[in-house]
Amino acid sequence: MRNAELPWGVERQDTHLYTPHSTFRIPHYSSGMIALARKYRPKHFSDLIVQDHVAAALRGAVAGGRVAHGYLFAGPRGVGKTTAARILAMALNCERRGADGEPCGECDSCTRIWTGAANLDVVELDAASNRGVDDARDLRERAMYAASAEGRHKVYIVDEAHMLTREAWNALLKILEEPPSRVVFVFATTEPQKIAQSAAPILSRLQRFDFRRIGPHAIAARLEQVLAAEGLAAAEDAVRLIAKSAGARGAGADPGRRVRRAAAARRRAGRQGGVPARGPAGGCGGRSR
Ligand SMILES: Nc1ncnc2c1ncn2[C@@H]1O[C@H](COP(=O)(O)OP(=O)(O)OP(=O)(O)O)[C@@H](O)[C@H]1O
Ligand SMILES: [Mg+2]
Ligand SMILES: [Zn+2]
Image 1 (cartoon, helix red, strand yellow):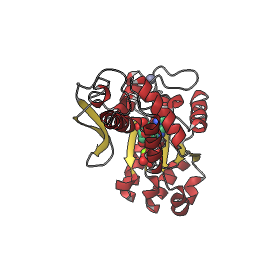
Image 2 (cartoon, helix red, strand yellow):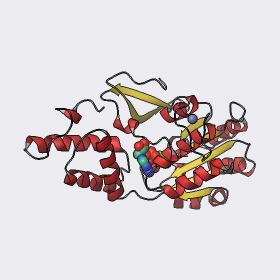
Image 3 (cartoon, protein in one colour):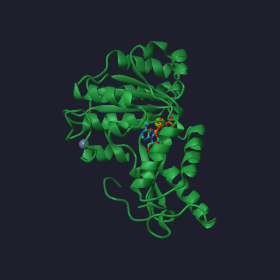
Image 4 (cartoon, rainbow, N blue to C red):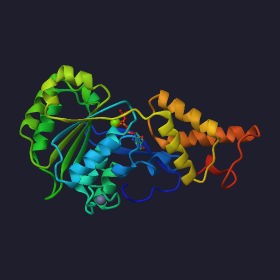
């Protein structure tokens, strides 16, 4: 299912299933409310909070046609590494890209990438389950095939890149030494020091971005934005507590989960005669739009 609005009551989970080759992410649907996480997931570089330095550099590189062949996105969990990689893939392949390097977020190509629909030009690999040299050889062979159409870019997003073996890195090094045109690798990791240990030579071929931790203030501000956009109210204390606990758990900036928690907290507080509800009666507890 791509581009189409999901049927009411169906939610696209952010968990992913993998094909037997563990290559393509397959959206997985289950019943429940339309996920706020999906609704508020960034589509543009400018939607990324806290990572302005990364957003500005990538946007500039796209606009100026100076995109590197290999990137390393390092940083804590849930701070936007995979999201930024997808936005980069969207920007490179967008049918109506802005002069500033931002993807339009709406064209068929952007939508396919954003929704995680099977896509010839964007390949997401989880290194945790693709560790061996065979996979890297396979990757190498496939990287040799340029993007699917003139003007398109092939983007490999390798998550948990620190899990790749030395052999896998060696095979990747060969690709990065002579990268095919219009092929971009984005390695995302929470543990860049492990890559420095097992694959130092590769680091010199990658442009590195260090993603910042998203602190409780930024999380609270984002949460308040989403609550306002949803016409919901939550006690300031609840927002602060949720932001604090999300930060402590490294849950990053996923707003959907937190708004649901804010909604639940509000319902509990409401039952105790606490926080007044705004918006329709019964508001946020049921459907999320
Ligand atoms: N900087 C950000 N700005 C806005 N939303 C964000 C940001 N970072 C994360 N998010 C939200 O959190 C969700 C998870 O982020 P993402 O998967 O990109 O994190 P990650 O850094 O790749 O984490 P992990 O190390 O666990 O793979 C995104 O779908 C997005 O909704
Ligand atoms: Mg990730
Ligand atoms: Zn587009």
